[in-house]
Length: 484
Image (cartoon, rainbow, N blue to C red; front, side, top):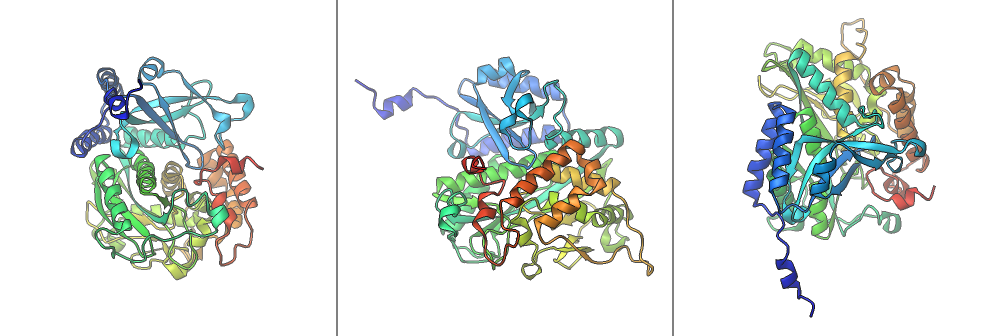
């Protein structure tokens, strides 16, 4: 006789850790990363844990492609421990990676970036670790900006004892039914689950339940959540977590979005991070708060400086503003993103900095010695977080400075591109963009964005077009892309 389901379930003893214990484990792992504990020491500890913990059925290794899509593959624990130095995959199947003639790429495990997962969200018996992509010769792969960001920040810390801190504010929508983005090709619309608006959601309505479950899981992952609430638009949400070192923060952006999508799916809903999925209402942004810290001192703070920040911070801002059109395609990487840059909906399309003007590309929030920072507002949530941080850091430190106007002003007000075609043209011809990304990555990024733009109507008009959703790089519909 066949076992019934209960008997079969009793044969499985997979890892399931309570949320309080998960949070302790993940916060301790994050502390080790932030304190830069020796990587070999952490690898040894993680290997021992995986060897001793019998309830783990698989290790999920994740990485991001050039556009920022999040890829995951599961390895048998024993295989991973034996073969961690030779994990290969087909790079030609990843858009923007290698060609078929040189398809084999490798994954290197970043052992400090190791997370214990909530079993009710991700399934029992799994842990997740971030990987970095290597070329066939074992060197860091030029299209993997996580690796490049880590190398850049490691070098900055090693040479100058300086760290880049980032705190993102990621907005999203929750729509009815699963796979609402993929089904948009047929339905042509999204259906809200709530029309309560800013800060207003009844304790047990679907949006509040989604926010509560997502925030609980994010805290368990060690994201150090600070607040969560419904946003201005119907069915819109925002959950904020504390600032962290740049690579950790970028990893947490991917985990945040992944967790939201998992929770929404379990509720029969879709969490969407499209910048402007519905016309006529506020879109989704991902404001990025940044500061640089050297020897325990916030380099952006000066109580006597303009708006409470230092001359160094203003120079950083000046470099970003002077080169804003060159890097706009990194900050707003999709056809749909340019719908969001609409000043009628608090969208930051002005190339200027302000302490109060929310239409400005950069805001200088009120802060003290610990919290003084620069807020980059014209960033969409579909930006590759690693490429974003890498580009902003290098531009802020190395970008050409503007020539002062005759009246002594730092800059005059200009505007960001209002469509992806102009953004591609400006990025393509930018010497700074080539210098930052490198010729190969710059060329591939332009090619990917041009293909996406060519599949969508050039004149978008006032209605959201099906093509800008279906060919959005975060909408996972490989079958459709392969029709071209």
